[in-house]
Amino acid sequence: MKPTVHDIARSAGVSLATVDRVLNGRPGVRHVTRERVEKAISNLGYVRDVAAANLAKGRTYSFVFVMPSNDNSFMIEIRDEVHAAMSRSGAERTQIRVVDVPPFDAQALADALDRIAADKPDGVAFVAVEGAQVHAAVARLKETGIAVVTLVSDLPGSERDHFAGIDNNAAGRTAANLLGRFTGGREGRIAAIAGSMLVRDHRERLEGFLAVMGESFPRLSVLPVMEARDDPALAAEVVSAALGHHPDIIGLYSLGAGNRGIVHALREVSEGARPVVVAHELTRTTRAALAEGLIDALLNQDAGHEVRSAIRVLKGKVEGLPVIAAQERIRIDIFLKDNMP
Image (cartoon, rainbow, N blue to C red; front, top):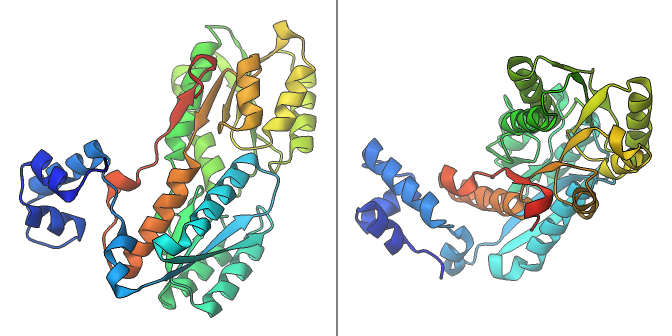
C-alpha cells in the first residue's frame, strides 16, 4: 500500500497543512520541522504524483528525451525506461518523444536542443556532454520557458533545473575502495577505461577514484585513463593492449560502457593473471561476467528511478513545485557475485 500524506503527517508528528506546505514549497514552516517532514517522506518512500493532482485540469505535459545513439547497454536500458513511460502516457498525462544524437558530440547535442526549443515542449531531459555550446543551448531553452533536466551525466554551471543521476564522484571513490581492498595488499598498476572525458559522469568518477587511490592506496599506481567511446571493439583492443604492455596490472576500473569488449579481452587472459575488475551497471553482459568471476564488483544505478525522477521533476517545474530531494536521490547499489538480484 502506497504511503499517503496522512502517513507523512503521522510519522513526522505534524498537521496535514504542514505537510502540504512542505510538499508545495510554501513558507511558514520552521527549518527543523521541514527537515522532520522530509525525513518522513524519505523513510516512507512517499512519491508525489503531480499528474494525478492535475487530472481535473486536463493538463497534458509534452516532454522530449534526448538520447545518445550508441551501443551502450545502460543507455539502451534508459531508452527502454523512457519507452515504458511513453506506454503510460495516457494515465500519466504525458506526451513523450525521443530525439537521437551522436554520442560525445557537444555540437550535435546543442543543435538538437535548439531544434527542440523551436517546438516549445514543456520540458527536456538529456544526457549532457560538456561544451560551451551546450551551456548556451540550455540557456536558450530556459529563456523560452522550457524546464530542463540532465540525465545520468550532469552539466553543472548551466541553467538546467535538476540532475537525475547518482553522485558520480562518490561512485568513483567507492570503486577505488573496492579495488584497493580486493587487491589484498599487493603492489602493482591499476588501469582505468572510460567512454570519454567529455562527459561529466566519467570525469567525476575518475576524480573520485584517483583521490581515494592517492589517499588510501599509494602502493597502487594508476595508469593514464584510456578512452574507448563506449565502443566494445575499441574497449577490447585498448584493454588487451594495456594488459600486454603492463603485465603488472592487478586491477581494472571500467568507468563507463563497452563492457562487452572488456569481458572479451579478459577471457583471453589466463585465470591467474586476470586483474581485479570493478565496473558499472548491472546488464546482461556484466551479470554473466560477475557470475563467471571475470568482474568482481558492480556499481549500479536504477535506470527506471532516473527516468521517473526526470519526469516527476519536469512536471513539478512546469507547475512551479519544489524538488523533494529525498524522493529524487538516486542510490548507488553494489553487487557482488553473491548478491546479484
